Length: 376
Image: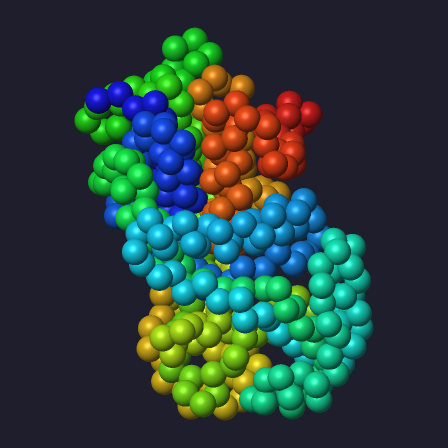
């Protein structure tokens, strides 16, 4: 059965792209090697933060801001279509700074926010503890980010799958895409283990597995980056907002859930496709959590898990058409797949349907890797 568009990968990005296209009357087939939203989308914490995370990540800030602005409408549409709640909470975030350089790092963080016209309120340690009474006395300074939010990513994944299905997306699960059907310089579909599936357009949204598809790696050189996570029962020590700690660099975060769980993360490990949890990784997460809120020392651990973020050579997502007609990429979102799902869906719909995109795609184009290879 021919589809106008095949989307490869049924994470939140792939489901979002498929649903967006289907609502425009496009015939969409969604393929995945396993059950939908059970990879990085399932393993995430659901923080929705567009603030810059470090040097080289600046192009991501406008994309993240645009996506966060879309989130209320995106959530309303998905909840209405699926009948499910997704736990969207605009409760703000508190970034706490520790150590002897706390005041200096607070100033650097505020300056970075100002460069991108992002709002941040500086707080003294005392002001921060009035906002979060359980915050450690070791915190030396803080910044309040009122516009930041969080979402239950697992609930969002379930809702996106149902919404896409109800929009007419045909899903095939347990189908491993091995390569592309190419005719000259045109992509005409995909090759699976048992068949060739034709299409007018193919979108690769397979996360860290994208590079394993024949003919795709040159445009999407993704690799897995493991992140371990912990869920706790925080009880009365539950923070009211997302809490992040800073000591020279981002070392930990806590994300409260509406169901009473507190998520703590995360590691950044180049461990291939190994999704094990390790004593060392879990210790680093728990140490950072207790550093932020000492009362968590006796919290009950409810669950541990890990996921594989889709990293890229420059840590930026890969978005847009390739030089093969009918082939485009929407992957490599690294730490920000949940945040960037709404804007990725909109941009993909725009470039596939020949509409003007809301934002320039040059910083994220899959062609940048071919250019860098040629330059070498």
